[in-house]
Each structure stands twice: as structure tokens, then as C-alpha cells.
Image 1 (cartoon, protein in one colour):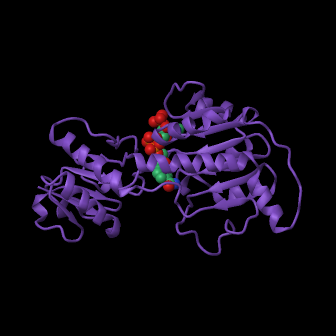
Image 2: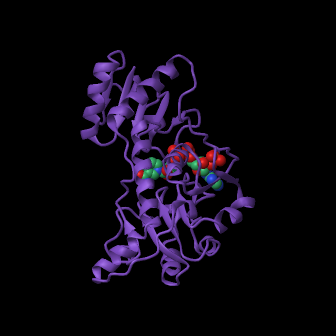
Image 3: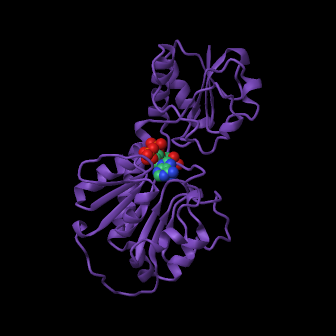
Length: 308
Ligand code: NDP
């Protein structure tokens, strides 16, 4: 029985060390040095090899090296094979920091001040208390809920939106298409943190921006595929939106000629809101392998019909 890791090889060495120290009973190898393909039972990969079923016929579980699974072509992965996304505290911690930072930056008009500084302009903008600022979080999964918990102590008025109904203390939770309008109409800072599926692809478009209060701002930390970039530029230029903080882009790396780079009210980062931390991720996968071997449910099992 072998565990194979196929992702960044430098981080793979950290995984190797942790497996050797904490799970010596689970032989661990780094792609492409997989040994006997017949003995590979667990694969940790961001991008699995295309001919997975033929290449690793005895595979028991495919672990995604990241929190999302939208990079996988689920249709090409053998139907019987469980797919598990990465649930580990390092990803959560990074995302919580990034969302708190981005919401505070928008709340305190930092994109406007960065622009003013470039033009040597001294122009104070009224400071509103957090209790007067309405934040909306789209996606109430592991990360959306953790981000809300970090924002709540500032006193923001927070609402959330997701596919199914959630109940979160102190947060007005909306669910499904029927309640999207009410959620958007009150969201002055919109944080997008959904899974990318055929239903959510392109959801951040002109129609959605028009339903936000005028001058709203957005944070996109889910996936670039959620955002229709030309619609964002038009909404910023027309004043419907005042600023955007983007961590994920439709095409990554963002092409050098993209107008997003130089827009005065866009701040962007290269998909770094959070990263799988090898130390905690290796431990999370070891725990899941142990659950699988004991016949217990694994943490982060993907519902393939739902797509996340
Ligand atoms: P979860 O699977 O726990 O949550 C996904 C959320 O999306 C759920 O609340 C789900 O609703 C919601 N959702 C899915 N489809 C719809 C829909 N059609 N309508 C409304 N809501 C929908 O994922 P995580 O919270 O762990 O992660 C969220 C995303 O963050 C990941 O999929 C990934 O793309 C992104 N990410 C980005 C990173 C970065 O560095 N920028 C790092 C890590 C993750 P429901 O609760 O009802 O199921």
C-alpha cells in the first residue's frame, strides 16, 4: 500500500518528513517516483494524471491538494473513486486573515486613499462605524463561516447567502435564488467565497452588480470563474461599484495586457488569499486515510453530483 503525492515537490518534502515521522506505517512517495502502480491506494494531487483509472487501477481515494475541486474534470475520474477536498486549519487561517483584511480595507476606503496618494491628493472621506456597514458573504461553507466569525467582533452588520439554508448566530442567512435579491440589496461590501460549479460560474455579472446598493464594493476570493471581468470594469467605471479586491482571476496568471492590472479602484493579488500548509495538510490527510481504513466517513468527501 502506497500514498503518492503529486503537487509542488518542495512542499512534498515536508509531507514526506511528516509521513515518515508520524505515520511510518503509510509508505509515502512523490510523483513521478511512484514505485509499483498496483500498490498505489491513495493519491494526493492538485492535477491528477489524465488516465487515472488505467494508470493507478487499485486507487482507493483521490485527495485534492487544495480546498476546491473545480480544477478536476470529475467526469473523467472513475465513478467509484471517492474524491476528497482539502480541509485543514492552514487554509482556513489564511482565508480568515485575507477576508478580514480586504473587508477592513474596503470599509476604511483604502483603495480610494491609495489612488489619492498616487495623485498627492489629501481628501478625507467620512468614517462610518462598522455597525453601520453591511457586509454580505456569498458562500457559507467552511471558509465563509470562518470569515464571518472573524468579522463579527468588529460589529459589522453581516448577512450570508448559500444554496442551502444555514443558521448562524447574529447573521441573517439567505438561501437560494429566491432570496438572492434581498441579500444583494443590503450588501455594501460583498465577499464571494462560493464553490465554482456550473450554477455559480459567471454569477458576479452586470445583473448582480445592478442589484447591489450604488457604490458597493466586492471581494472575490472564491474562483476567477465566478466573475465576469468586463462587467466589473463597466460597473466600476459607471459608479455602480466603488472598488474591488480580487485574489482570483478568470485566467491565471493574469495576462499582462489585462485592464484589471491598472484600474485605479482594483487591488489584486496572485491567488494567495490562502494556501494549503504542508505541515497541517499532511496531518489532515493522514487522519483521513486512517478514517478510510477504519471504514469511517472521511472529512471533506465531495458530493460529485453537486460538484463540491
Ligand atoms: P465549501 O464547499 O465548504 O462551501 C462552498 C459554499 O458555496 C457553500 O456554502 C455552498 O452552499 C456554496 N454554493 C455552492 N453552490 C452554490 C449555489 N449554486 N448557490 C449558492 N451557494 C452555493 O467550500 P469552502 O468554504 O471550503 O471554500 C469555498 C471556495 O473558496 C472553494 O471552493 C475555493 O474555490 C475557494 N478557495 C480559494 C482560495 C484562495 O486562495 N483564493 C483558497 C481556498 C479556497 P451550501 O452551504 O448551501 O452547500
